[in-house]
Amino acid sequence: MDSPPKSNTLNPNLCFFFLFLSTNLLTLFLSSSLYSSCSLRSLTSIAAFPATDDRASFSGQLTSQSDELLTFVSQQSLPLGFNVNFGSDTIYSPVGRACTLFPDELRCYMSYNVNGSFPDDELLA
Image (cartoon, rainbow, N blue to C red; front, side, top):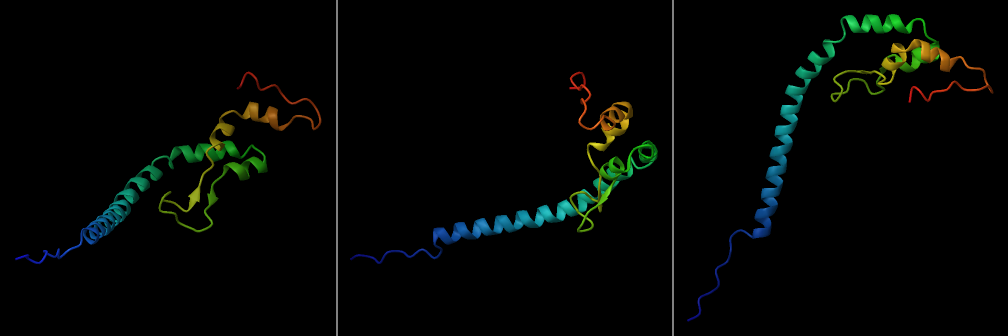
């Protein structure tokens, strides 16, 4: 008379869990393999481009500056070595280039008298 209820062979929650896990693993695999092969080629070509003439003129501008500025502006080695995100084992200060382009203004602000009046920077702002 009454037929027994049909039993589902695969629970919907288990199916969703399997789908979620497999798509995440597939995304992880594709992103890690694509990221490592493509990014190293593009970063080395970008990093190799400005290293020819720009670096020589940049280091020549720094030699006339103080040791404190030279330490702050020059390249720094990363503490954990090579970083894949940067594609290098060194990092360069982003503010150092502006300091070397305007040496007169820098000299004015770095040579004022202690406890004296600070040079006006309203025009530069």
